[in-house]
Length: 151
Image 1 (cartoon, one colour):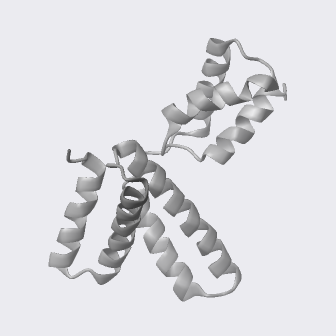
Image 2 (cartoon, rainbow, N blue to C red):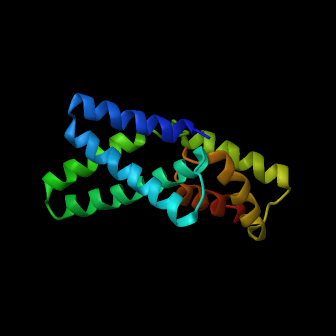
């Protein structure tokens, strides 16, 4: 079964080959190899949610590397990481604003009638399915914790 996001990345690999865009091709091949590795390791066919999760993980790794390279003064490597961040981000959905995330958190807390910290797992479970690829889940977790602790 062909998948939208994975198929789009495969098409972009072909287009980068035709256009002889070495840097873009290298990054897209890294993405494809990670997708293929995950399919082989888990013996599954990836759907769009799986691809989004992998892309988010790769994006987070690139952001960490970018910070380390910048701190070390390696601007050449930092520039490569920034290029990869920009390219991978293009496949992720448009991120939600902080206000939209806060409103979603408030709505789910009210819907689950879960005003205390013991309900954090249920709230995060609901949020994860709705925010996949659209918000940093670590930041969302901190917002939920703050909301449930009454701050």
